[in-house]
Amino acid sequence: MRRRLALLCLAAVLAASGCGNTKDNEAEPSSPSSGMTHTDMSHGGDVPAGLTEAAAPTFKVGSRAVIQADHMPGMKGAAATIVGAYDTTAYVVTYTPTTGGEPVKDHKWVIHQELKEAGDKPFEPGSEVVIEADHMPGMKGATGKIESAEATTVYMVDYAPTTGGETVKNHKWVTESELSAK
Image (cartoon, rainbow, N blue to C red; front, side, top):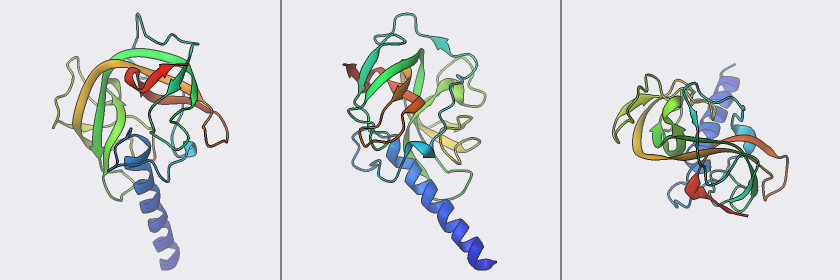
């Protein structure tokens, strides 16, 4: 029984540490995306309540773009189809997963509408928040700290990983600066 519990704990720690820094940080050597697969993330098509569709997005819904972010292996350089475009504030957050393990540093992106008691004004860097997003195991309900905030258009995308495998559907979120014209 103890051995089984120890193995489960080890698996949880490895999963949490592999999910954190990696898939959600673009070109930041301190937080590469090794160990993350698209199956580690939630890709539901639901958008948070109160999220406003972008009036004039650079990349229109249904259009194609190239992903320049490396939130996950196989993402950078992948051809994407834009599924949704929304105007909001996107945050880089550091949080400790509810499943335990090491803190996830500089996770990109959690949007304003995915934070508990968000209100009308954006949070300032250094603010403590409770994350309602469920992008990765242990994220929903986690307490985190805002590292930076950016008013931007965020996109939900479908893409085929450059590493092969199944198409990733409804990936949340890629910012406008992380996309380029196809």
